[in-house]
Image 1 (cartoon, helix red, strand yellow):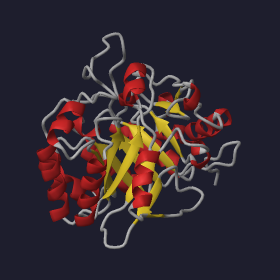
Image 2: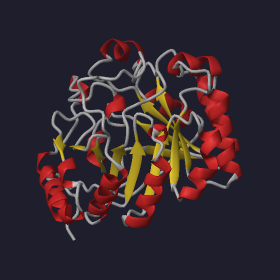
Image 3: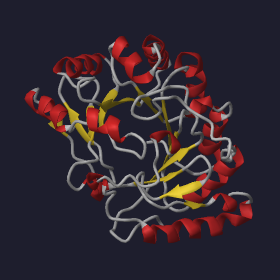
Image 4: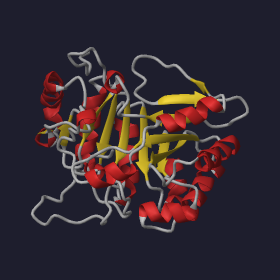
Length: 330
């Protein structure tokens, strides 16, 4: 079997698939003015049938995990059907989603029954005022209620992501609030460094801070770093006896971050992106139309890996095609 492997020996068992670039939140680091429709653009996102064919092709290329992202994936009325279809027909072993969690309390049972293997929820602060400041929405309690609903249903593999921002959610008080949270809950929490995109340079300059500040807190509190295999990805994870959850750090500006890259991205309109911050993308959607195109689709994806670069070059300000994180799922 041909597997996804680039010229630097990196393998790619993991795909981040955006199913919509629409989002109902106004997070300052992503869509500070909210989602705006570009009327000149083709708004038709990849269909459930196209996704089904794509997932089957990816499975035959050694992909074992697909993460459905956005925008906000749960905005799509058929997102539960998409999950079920991938689980039933593709051969993909693990299907997960990233969501802002705005309607988790209403759809928790549907999520549990869909067979979904994991969920990442974006919560940038446990302080309701800070949460509203970042997202433009006063919905923290609703989202936390949704998590409780999932827990009542015995849903496993819940993770929370937060973007680390200077002077906003980077104090020891913030860190200790999350520490108390994961002590009581079997939920993993990860801080992600704020990343520069094409349209957030001033925001980035104002709020970017190295994740080392959080790592220093973890070291002081005697958290233990976990080691994983070669294809585990770029997250550094920490454990501590007596805590039900884990801490994680994703630091894209750290040295050698890209050496552990294990994922490719596909946009909601069917473009393959080799890197979140790459300068090129190629449409593969025309090969998702018929079952008979499966081999052509696999061949095109394999050939594109010849063009994957060794690094994202974020450290020198290269942000590629990525205007904001809603277009490709972060």
